Length: 340
Picture 1: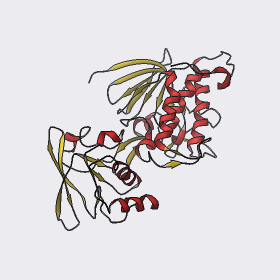
Picture 2: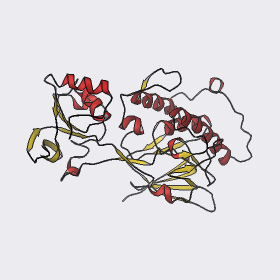
Picture 3: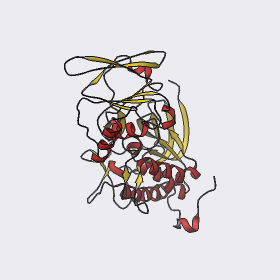
Picture 4: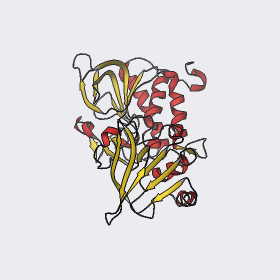
């Protein structure tokens, strides 16, 4: 495995909303950032689980979808030129005794040297729950996807969506506008989505574009050279059906795992990292925890609270990296941001 080495002021672990806002706040403190995330796209759970679901408690936005929020946060962070390392999980953390700098290593062999670390990993590194299908890996990234980045990628295609939650139902409704045909495979006739979404899906199923394949489960896939041609499904009695398909989207949720983070000798509070509510500092100087992965008395697991923690962490990181330096806090209205 080849290694790529980088140097930066701060490594942000997690590219969800709080991680992205951490990049912005670090930028305002004149700190450069590299961002690592186990998912293949920026956005964390907002993009992976509820991209089209409205969020109602973001200040100044009476309602904003999960993906729109991520898009705005990405745009907000962009002037500070963050470097994203996606589809790779943080595997190791070490600290040089002489320089005091941290080295973060990832599953892709990336090695990042940083003066401080901000952990914004939600409930841990998220990865898709993969269906137990033979040959699945042959089609991942070409015909099998666990996230939708652009609807246009599925225009005119025969799409099989497997799952019964919000992600499956929401994307079935959305992709029905561009796909040649959408098949929704679920082991039960009832879905676990919002009632209004389920009603909309049922209405679409009365037409020609959407077909509900229930009660069935995935059994096998077929194709060659990474190109899917068919998905086989089976009911509880073992009866099978072959569906001609170009794409399979298994939406069985994400599995969270703190992974190596749990071995970093940080003081933990249950399954979360104990943090100072005033500074987001952890028990190891130079490491800060923000968002759902942090815990302290009175903690509210809300995105807007994570934003405030990100600001505190960035301020704390600057003080840690530049001890003794007088920092004159400036409002964004007077300080401004760099021009891209």
